Image 1: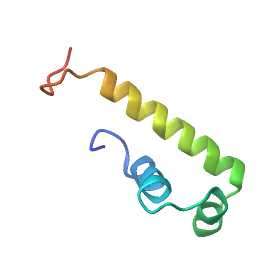
Image 2 (image 1 turned 60 degrees about the horizontal axis):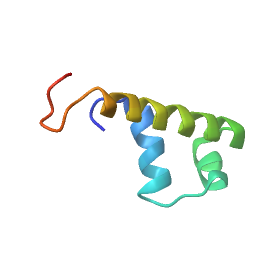
Image 3 (image 1 turned 90 degrees about the horizontal axis):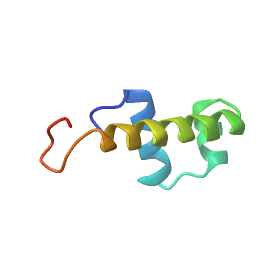
Image 4 (image 1 turned 120 degrees about the horizontal axis):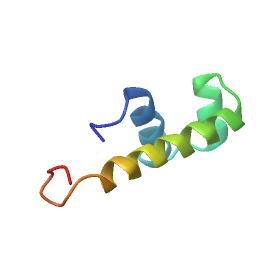
Length: 61
């Protein structure tokens, strides 16, 4: 999680750690629901890409 931007980290934590719904995220961030969905999608993709680039011991492939 340290490898992604604070904005991406924040939206992922709000959604999956704090269990906020798309609607709640939309209201709290003052953005549209479609924007929330896109940001979540991009944040998850970035996290997966970063994870795939590292081995189990944390060294770059």
